[in-house]
Length: 224
Image (cartoon, rainbow, N blue to C red; front, side):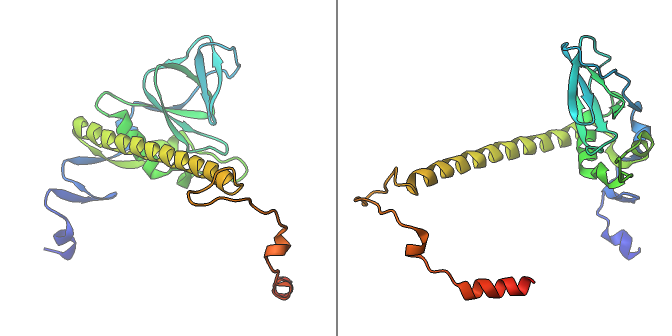
């Protein structure tokens, strides 16, 4: 038995994408999707009820939808090329965006997280106008659990983590806002800490601090 074989845990196998569970499959996206194609919707804004998705997100609305159902959208061209989003319901999709449609045996949320983790911007080409093609997306290789229930369980775990992160980010922002308010009140004397009273004095910075002119001059000479 080789050293390589000894490092592979029981129930796993070595593949082109690394060591994966033995019951998972390695497939190109073209082999586990129904289609990867650009949208065909007109981008004229009619102020309707159905959103028009472009490479920058929602770029307008129309009175009539061209597509429906759960799909993954990938910005195809421009500064946002490679950006991945999920959509559902009824909507329109412009030519600047790729639509990925899945068969029933694939959990779209699982594939969404795989694409996010892959970071499609790695395969974008073109300096003037960044671009990613449907052919590139179709040729991406991923490890896929053969059991859809496992796909869904993984997607749910990642979604729960996203929700927790979002909750923590909101809490941090709230704490920052509280701190900004406290600084505004405490540093201006509008609010006093317990045990302190009396009037504050108003002074110029030069009255309470000294400036090291020699050091400042040395720094300027060093930068020249």
